[in-house]
Length: 269
Image (cartoon, rainbow, N blue to C red; front, side):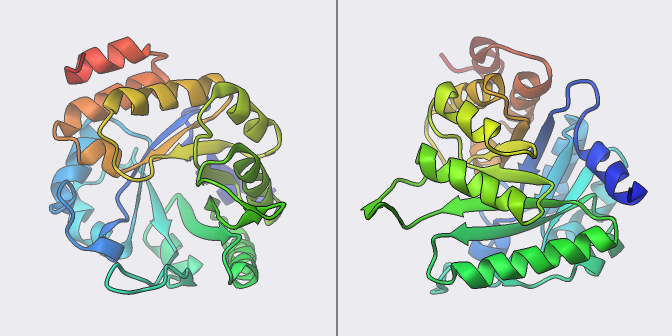
């Protein structure tokens, strides 16, 4: 047993319920200073104040906010990226070494694999080898499992339940310690995703939604289906009252709140 690996895994999930609230703030490396994360120190302070379990972000973001971090807030450092909205082809490259994540004090590393992409084989190999390196130095890996392409010749939507069931398991098979992926739209279909994946699954938020209620409903239902938490970003910090949004998602994940209570907290009908 690698004690470091086990200790870091335990740090990301609350021991009382085995769940985790991770706030994703890795967007600026791709899209620049998006409203909500323009000031890294400010948003980290909000997360620390609300006692979220972890923050997923990049090296520069940590450098710009380092004095705002708390010892109880886990860092999930992104290792892959290498493209931007200025014309990149969204092809994942390994741009940070696992040893760098450890030097930053990370609890976990984050790697994306776009299954079904024309460079799928390259992405899988890159992720699998990076996971091996991370595990050698005692660092767990969150694998963001994305799905595109076709099933039996038919294109599918981003959160297609069959595709997500497949890629969640594929991520576990190459050694991921937890998988970040899409909620599939219903507790019944997501329960099958969870059943088919032997490592914890947290749901991502995806593109910004105008329906906070639907976000809360998805979080609630994913947990009911066996999900272990969230790794959500812009659907929290782009909605205005960050403190209330953080309180609400913490309540849903760790407090077993109803969707109505979460909506009341942020002041929506």
